Image 1: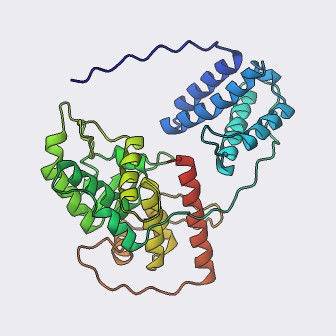
Image 2: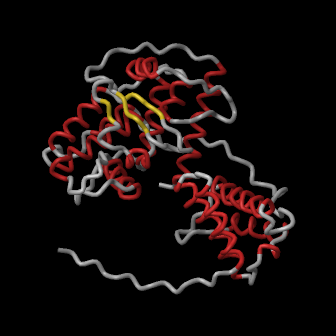
Image 3: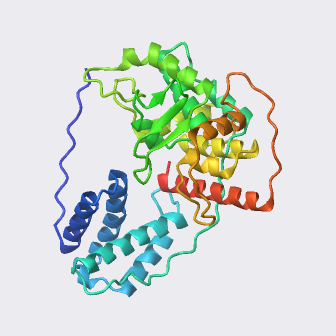
Length: 355
């Protein structure tokens, strides 16, 4: 039995007025039903600013001026990680937008008199397309790598097939329960996805077959009491967690020797790209991915799950147990613009998830 070493207790940080304002802001976000992931992300973004401010002996919200925020913005631009990497434009924008939201909240709650971040110029968004997408053949090379003679190999194959078939986010896969997979209808229920939105999406026959195999042959041997019903479990019987899941998928992608790197999100990119290349309408891809809209198109409409299943089966190369030749309809110029916007939004997601 492994004995965990106790971590040394960290010295408590002084509870400055800035930190008090942050705590109150996060409590308000939780009380107004922001998702826990959003609250955590906001806390981390603002804590970075507070740490930067405290080094400069700034501890009061009223001390923050627009020139100070402009100085922080320059700090973000020139910042280097321990590995020497710059912050992406998306990350810089995100941190500054968190500041805007926080100061706007402080004005509304009479903690400060004016919002110094209200007219702060944000760095311009870059138009980014996915840097790494797998071809159909490359995806298949990754999928066959797990050793299905082993229990965890069957589980890993089921995980990879689920990512490839559905394009769901890694946090969404971690939160799946055994009750979310409807094997009769061939669908998966995503509970409280990004933005706390539920959705139902199709899962292909092949992925469903591997999930069924995992459920019957593997999960009963991994599960420990009390069993909370999460679908995919670790070797110790715990629910899957995002970071270990990314590490697992990354190892398989690297082991395929494709000259490409990536983790869970690479299958999200790949699913969307391959379905688009096989002729799927962008609206159906949006429904699969859980995108409420694309800011540049505003074209989102609700679609029937039955119609979505037909489109998925017809355009996803791994959806069916037996392959059939698919006809790819021609695309017009507007379709190509929508495709580019969709892929750009996927790349922005990848940067935010920071796998």
